[in-house]
Length: 178
Image: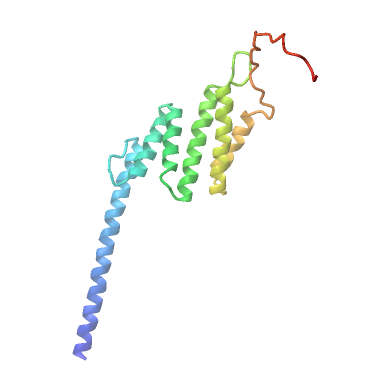
């Protein structure tokens, strides 16, 4: 009986030790994650080399906040090349679309009231990025809302700005079929 109690004590002691070890590891990880989340919420760049993905994401987010939309889109595009998970891809596509949408809003109208070519291109790219984000995360409400805002800004009949016709005449070319 005493031998049996000793074995039980040893087994329960090992289970207790492994549980405490796991608890300490989880507390360490939780503390590390809290520090990263706090740095992001304050607007600081993450300097820890253990999080290169978050470091790049924070840099792209910071570029967007500083109204450097083209570089933000490029940095988010570089994040897509790191093979993130599907939910991360959806978030990245959503952020790409947001930056393109705002970039299009800034460059929206020419003097004659037509859409700027850059704005038209940015809107088209934003539409594709929102749709890709919704393919990856179909229940994302903010992506649906922003896509509907984009549709309200874009007209169905977006006409390109009138181009100047060439002043060179080609009068020596025959007209019609021979």
